[in-house]
Length: 357
Picture 1 (cartoon, rainbow, N blue to C red):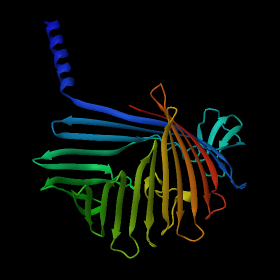
Picture 2 (picture 1 turned 90 degrees about the vertical axis):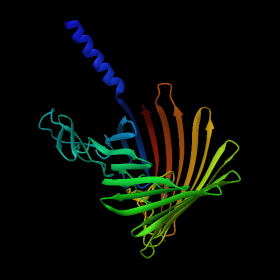
Picture 3 (picture 1 turned 180 degrees about the horizontal axis):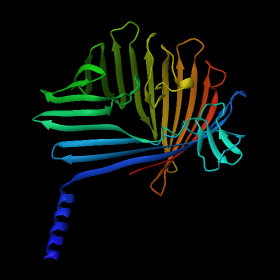
């Protein structure tokens, strides 16, 4: 009898596992970044940072629940210079927000480049938690998720969001609402090979268009505001010449608004230093990309201008190579020149080891 009960329990367990449609994916990367500042008054820095993401997806028919965990970003907790100090005990790890004990009598303290901090933020948070399902022909999405990046605005993650979308007579229609945003209605369609969409917002609208003409990809994105001098617009053209992919983009901001996107052009999401743009600054970027000896090689030139005495230029060389271990190695070299500051001109070498599963 015991054997029969055990067999029945095992069979029930296996059946439950077979019926459960759950997947787990994720990624982790480790970066070493060396920054060589041209100014003698600013210390060079060597920083290790780590980031990890974990995504759990559960499905039941047409209904899906997604949980995204993110965190372990240590780049603001790394101290960068060593000075003498007195430690009460060797076992004390953190005695102050800017003091990490290395050994008795020695302490690692913050440098002038301001990278010290506490370990309080070293944690994993639930970043996204949402449900998608269908009611008839209507797709429903509800919960918390990131709005995503584009070349004009910063991404935002808010809770209490709701979306309903469907297709009607060749038009894609979506209604969106969030606790920190007003209602939005988006209508999209394709006319003569041109993908078009229009989003009506409480304080403005967004217009997008994309197509391909003679092998050249064209993209247009405008964020129009009802407020004076707060419109933003982005233009892009891309093509392939031989073995080289070529892309040119330009983001323009009127005098009272700021480009804050985080894309191939650069990370302008309220970042520090030269990447924290001023209202009215425009961004122009050119990218060349090709394959060479098993590596993907990318060159980018980015110019930030249109505000007096605040022009910034940086050039990037990015070499990406998949490794036999399943990880990916990426080297990024950046040379930055900033007219707005005498301390931010620098060259940066970033070495990244990343893996996805």
